[in-house]
Image 1: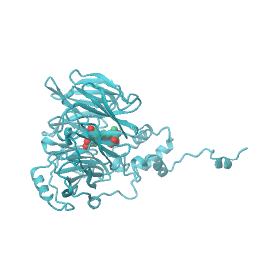
Image 2 (image 1 turned 45 degrees about the horizontal axis):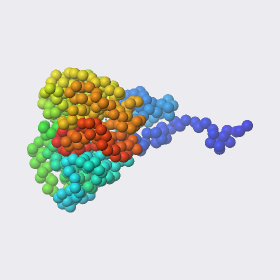
Image 3 (image 1 turned 180 degrees about the horizontal axis):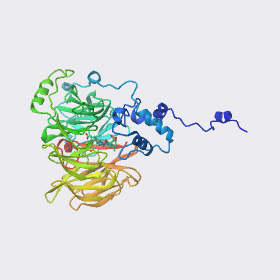
Image 4 (image 1 turned 90 degrees about the vertical axis):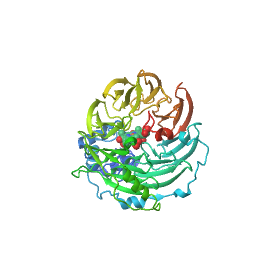
Amino acid sequence: MVSLSQLNNLGYAQTKPVIDENVLYQQHCQTCHGKNRLGGHGPALLPGNLSRLKPVVAEKVINDGRPATQMPGFSSVLNQQQVTALVKFIYQPPTKAPQWNLTAIKNSHRMLVPTSQLPKKPTYQADIMNLFVVVESGDHHVTILNGDTFTPIHRFKSHYALHGGPKFSPDGRFVYFASRDGWVSKFDLYSLQTTAEVRVGLNTRNLAASADGYYLMAANYLPNTLVLLNSQDLSVKDIIPVSDGHGKPSRVSAVYTAPPRNSFIVALKDVKEVWEIPYNQQGANQLRQLSVLPEQSLLLPASPFTIKRIPVTDYLDDFFFDANYQHLVGTSRETHNGNVIQLDQGKKIASIPLTGLPHLGSGIYWTINKQSVMATPNIKKGIISIIDINNWKVIKEIPTEGPGFFIRSHKNSPYAWADVFFGPNKEKVHIIDKQQLEIIKTLAPMPGKNAAHVEFSKDGRYALLSVWDMDGALIVYDAKTLQEIKRLPMKKPSGKYNVYNKTHYAEGTSH
Ligand code: DHE
């Protein structure tokens, strides 16, 4: 008979399941949530970040995964005791509280190429306004694509896990990226090089660029701050600690630019408020004066901004705007209804039935017989909701083959493209007639592989679709005939952004 020690030596003995939470965390969570729970591709797992999540729900998330995110379920890998140990672990305060203060931000700032050394014109032949910036999240690269010939002009390594849309300077020359681990970088499309970078936080959500081109505002989960940057050199101009009137801190879910209002609008995660921060003339003048200081200037003036707090009845984690930025439609991830907030009045005026949160900034708008409508996917149900924005009523729910993430169109296109991001039909994309509100065609460009996120060329003649896979592709379609024109192999090309559409806040895309 073989003894236990002999079995052990042969590697056959049944191993006792690990219940050391540190080991479990390093094995299963660390790659996405960061070595010290500070966040990476996934959010930070610290008590402050989990304040709205009950431990029993955290346990369910670890077991079953979280829909609409990259979080998988672990019930087939971890037993109940291990899951409980992990939950206990993530709710414990870290031995050393994470800090990312002004000094840390200043020390991280790097001016890589002074503005004075940048060329006056593009160093290559292409219509700058019809370039696409393609984020390849598979290997953390960005491709700059010629939108007339669909040939790549340049490919470069980005910071780890860029997420959300890059933002552009008003003339389209510069692109600003934010990574989940807090880096903001500035890239020059004329000379194809990164000119400056700065780390604004430990776990960052996104970035907004003011419509006048002077400011960038970054939104952080960790620490609970908004960070204002001078868009010229990415020097820090202000850090706004985020809390309610009684000092209760909040993570920042996202920050957006509302161009006609000349303001930033901020979604808060842990406080029932929406913030509007006007970048008013006085502020702009102050910053204009500051931007003539030497580029490495690390002076921090008093904030030129005042914050308008709009109290809301629920947490509004996610939202999108109507065409004139008069209203925002915000959703709480718990209650799943859309709250319509009139921004001038600073109050809720309607509620829209939505099933599951739409992904942030997911809504698009167009007109049907002079009537303005908005459309949004519902992440938990296979429907596209069409909303009449005169009365905020859902006029149609278009059934799809599964819940989707993104819907996109262009003013010159009769169609809206909606992906089926989740479930067995994730390879499919529906083409919807914007007047008839019917699906007229369903594409499945790479069977078994997730097809998602569309952006149109400047004139709307072509639609570019991603296949989200390490052996994925960017596929160019004729937006009228729906025929495939070109297929470019890419590493999980998550989002693509057309310079003209973004700088003109075009109808049918995100802003
Ligand atoms: Fe996103 C945009 C938040 C999960 C891909 N996503 C955004 C924006 C926010 C956001 C705040 C708007 C940024 C902007 O444009 O300034 N995303 C969230 C979440 O809270 C959520 C649900 C959970 C999370 O992990 O943070 C989430 N997002 C995902 C994904 O799992 C996706 C599919 C893959 C990934 O890269 O993480 C994903 N998000 C995207 C993309 C955009 C985006 C491609 C830009 C869309 C656009 O056209 O502008």
